[in-house]
Image (tube, rainbow, N blue to C red):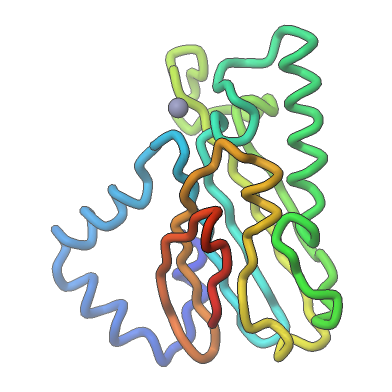
Length: 186
Ligand SMILES: [Zn+2]
């Protein structure tokens, strides 16, 4: 989220400054976005020129059904399968072929994938998250006019709600997306 805010176009700066003026509300907003709630994931999308950026933050529970380090063969297999699905963002986010988007960057991070926790001591934590960061370059970005999360819900059915924040040249908006209504138009 914070990384995406850096990419905000200048036109939106007055809005950002107005928010920052009320520090208390600002912090509160960040706090609620950062909350770890099983069943709830967050997805930030930014479209700027030909660059499409997606950032997924989700409790590992939503993705693999556990949050401890994978030690059993079954857990390891589940994790490997999830990783494979998460590394196919075209399918996961239903990016239309006509937009001609090519993945230029993708990165998964999680203590479950062996990444070090920010706090350094993964053993102390009962909860784990999975972060996915994707960047595309799109030849026909005008084709992108909606975000369809049907496949994400199908791939990871423990995900009940996705809190979407999106920034495009035309608008900035937030939406709560559910399996029964998985599309955000923009
Ligand atoms: Zn948890």
